[in-house]
Image 1 (cartoon, rainbow, N blue to C red):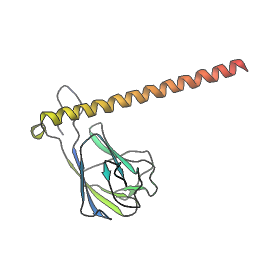
Image 2 (image 1 turned 135 degrees about the vertical axis):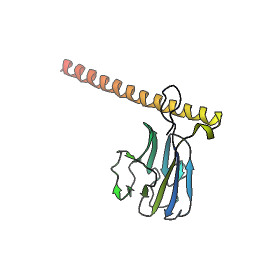
Image 3 (image 1 turned 90 degrees about the vertical axis):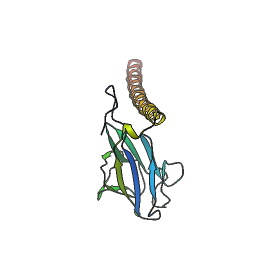
Image 4 (image 1 turned 120 degrees about the vertical axis):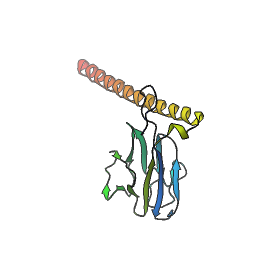
Length: 163
């Protein structure tokens, strides 16, 4: 995997999911981005028309130079290479992995490493913006949690002092 200049994180490998069983068998799902949602409705980036797939089923995320898969509380579960994923716990994805969404929709994972030579300037800039937004969101979430913890501690201290 090539590194982007100036020590920035590696650009995402192109991700493709090929449905090998279930109602979407034969379909290929190829999307770009650093965070992709999987679900039964068109609200998801990867739309799997299967009643056993939850509306918001799983999330694919590019982080630390790899793709991860996380079940986000689906009703019928997500299975990676025969191992059921625990809700909220990301699992690393590799080329050739097999994922079962729900009880019927099985997909094969294909990863193609990013290549600067095959990318337009516009695609490269869009990717840089997406990765920057992901880092900003993560920092904002961390800061919000810190503020919430501080507020909670201050509230407990005030309640204890007034008692």
